[in-house]
Image (cartoon, rainbow over the protein chains, first blue to last red):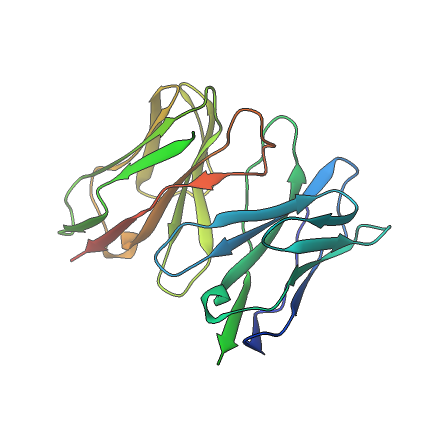
Amino acid sequence: LAKTTQPISMDSYEGQEVNITCSHNNIATNDYITWYQQFPSQGPRFIIQGYKTKVTNEVASLFIPADRKSSTLSLPRVSLSDTAVYYCLVGDESGYSTLTFGKGTMLLVSP
Amino acid sequence: SQTIHQWPATLVQPVGSPLSLECTVEGTSNPNLYWYRQAAGRGLQLLFYSVGIGQISSEVPQNLSASRPQDRQFILSSKKLLLSDSGFYLCASTWEGRTNTEAFFGQGTRLTVV
């Protein structure tokens, strides 16, 4: 799997938009970019996945530039309940993946 | 719908005792299965993964072992627990029709070795 780099932590306030960027300079042609969210004492939860350009679902948006060497998870109008650790993973969706998680980004949303 | 059963939710075991954690998956066939450990305040450490019955790959050498006796059953074991084995153990599975980087996790087992 391509190595990823994320900020260790981020702070925000309720109602703001939060953008978490992940760097993956060695991403391979067949690799997808996947983001997970983890609350304390729970397993990670899949949020969003993309290959290029922009992907949006009911939870977040994922922006991927043309060179795919980075990606940005965008959380619109965060609330206190969005306080969690966010992980960026890069891997080939075919065959199997070892799903290695990095340290993630701890997002703290304050009132 | 897909479901991952992981038990027990919490476990307190003395040093030197054996361990067996079980994970079963419903709603899919031939999943990739994973065991992770997360120490307090730390990231997810991949311990084992399996792409099929009897096929186990170990990521970190230690006193733990894993087995996959059935397609949707994944077991984590130890013959003698160490204090350092304490942590939050998570089972994860991929699903038919989803990509292999889109895993679903169980609720986890909080293991305390005393």
